[in-house]
Length: 245
Image (cartoon, rainbow, N blue to C red):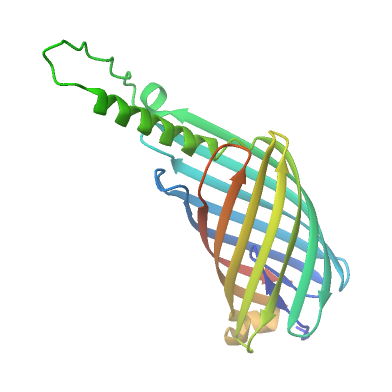
């Protein structure tokens, strides 16, 4: 395989000047402190039309128990066009994109566990004051609502992203990306994703003979939603691999 300059990029892809890139990642989505962690995976496909423009598509899934009352399956599909400014060891890109989100939330108590929500017990004057219990229940309900508000993104979205990668050495690189997204449910999303990558092609003879690029990456994403009365950031962790042909 002919040698070309490759630079890893956020989302299990890489700048290759030409050719097709395929990447996949698996990890954990960590929402707010009051929410449970969930499994996550994503797949990215990108084609380089020339050394300065590429187009691609990616799919992301979150799934699992959101809190003690609900389970969730979140799906995101996205199309993007990237404009690149690259050198031998560096690539910077800007990308407009179009996305589609779909969220399915199922109530544990009604659909999974088959249990009814316990009815409120009658309170007599000689019983201890249960005001503290009521306040605790109200706080728990608000926290559960915040968990589910994280996934109010539903339908189409548009956004703009900026990112890049830099080869520190022959084997190791750093990546970073950010994008701002507007969802037509009237919510804004800010996503910041730094990462590190290892050039597996350099130590794998088969990949060096057959593929244009092979990178293993680890990324940490910080996500913040606006316009939905939620404070705090969510995090996502991905371990992934990229193949270029």
